[in-house]
Length: 238
Ligand code: ADP
Ligand code: MG
Image (cartoon, rainbow, N blue to C red; front, side, top):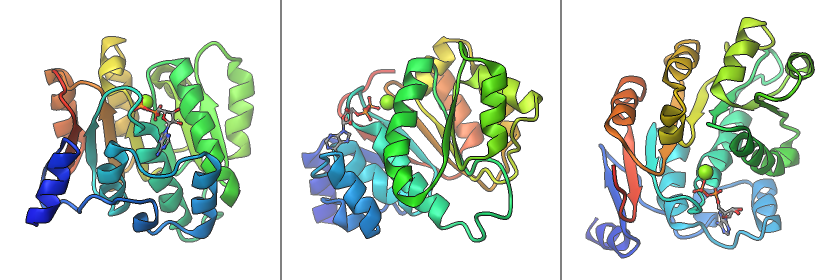
């Protein structure tokens, strides 16, 4: 335990919550399957970034996580890699419809970036990902969602539109990510986020990532995450 505490300290990782899994040093330590290890190597990722070292084992253990680290620190793979594992762990994948992993991001550009990162790892398993955001034809997105997917990456407003159009159902959704939560609040998406969260079964795994943690985001996190582990890397303001 002492050694773990010192290792965290050396990486400027702070954690809070009950029974926090210890940080990993390598992707091998995460127990990823060979296909996923190959996809990681193909990306040129040699070892986990600091946030990944601590967030990956916690997310893989099924816990809810609040991850706070600055932009460019590798937060995306912290939730995308465990999402692939989570999806492959679902029994009878084909029986139901609708996404298993739902990722909300504040802007079209961010949704596209996450979508591209997710696709790189999903491909190895034949997992289908869709991106849904404003500025693209609703009819095209409707058709794409109707064709089926395991992952949806979306801006909140457009996801609500798609849910209203019944382009997808959330019955299978068990892995929810709110990325750049602070920016989603700044852009006024709190009502949409609350609506989306309300449509996803409460026994889901929920992850919230943010570069900063303003009080309003803190309040939402307390309401929608269960027994979360908070991981902070470096100095982060509110
Ligand atoms: P954040 O979401 O924290 O702003 P990103 O997830 O967008 O950061 O990652 C920033 C950059 O780092 C991306 O170009 C990504 O491909 C790269 N990256 C992520 N993880 C690793 C890793 N383990 N090794 C090398 N590069 C990585
Ligand atoms: Mg990011």
